[in-house]
Structure formats: structure tokens, C-alpha cells
Length: 185
Image (tube, rainbow, N blue to C red; front, side, top):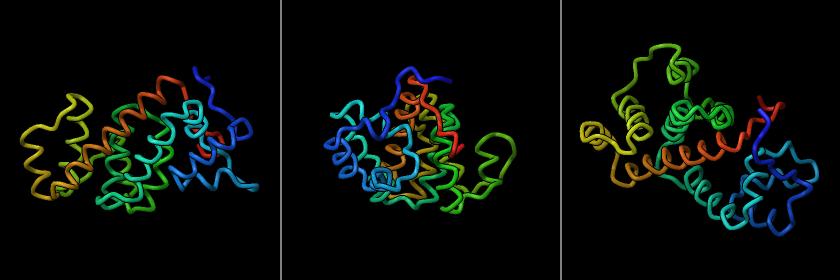
């Protein structure tokens, strides 16, 4: 699919914007070096809107690098949200991160709906919370009780923010037509 909004290429991103992106999202620094790998289109898309790029990337960095959830838990939430919002971009970007965090291929297949998996009570509650948040923008009382048995208040809030952030990003990526890089797909 050709995008409805074309992300900026690395060479077209103003140096000041590139500096702000890197300051807000340190993981992006590798994409602005002389021997940089291909830049993810999402960075070029965000560079189009300087007022949003920095705060959004700082929020994303907080979820990725400063959150209280275990990495595996965050990646389960992210993959489930990507699947439920039909975001191939987020799905493809997070598959390697999920694998590195210990999400098994069987679990990935189950999230994608192609197989069944015997989830722990905590994981089942997380996946149900994603479904409820995407469908109704709220977690039911019964699911909240299940989550509360496994997570403290700080983690509960982070669960909501992870699903909310990736749902928002999916809306932007799906609507603008941004797709994964061929080299990474």
C-alpha cells in the first residue's frame, strides 16, 4: 500500500528535529549515524510534526525503557493490540522484541488467532483486557479483578497506557498507510 502521508527520508529531516527525536527517544540515535540501518518509517512520519514527535517519542521511551511491567508482559500487550487493531507495522516491529522477551512462537500464533494456547491466569487477563479496551475502551470489572490479583496499581495503569498508546499509534499508521520496510519485513 502506498502511504497517504509520505514519511521524511533521513536526509530530509532537519538536524534540529533529528536531535530532538534522539533526545526524546534514545533508541533512535542509531538511525542518525553515518553507518545507520534503514530508518523506520514511523520516525520519518513523526518528524513531519515536530510538536508531537518529541513528546510522543518520550512517552514511548518511558513505556519501553522505564516502565514497571516485565518486558514479556509489555510485548504480549503490544502484539495483542497490534493484532486487534490490524496494525501490521506494529506487529512486524515488535515480533523480534517479543521473541527476545521470551514470547514463544506458539504464543505468537495464539495471539494471531491461528492456534490455542494454555495461558496463565495473568496472561489470559492481559489478553482479555486488550480485547475489552479495543472493543469498548474500558476494562470490565471481572477482568479488572483478575488483573488486580496479579499487578499493583502502577502496573495496572501501565497496562492501560501500553494498550492505549499502541492503539493510537495503530490508528495513525493504518490511516496514513505507513508500512514496514521491505528489508525488515
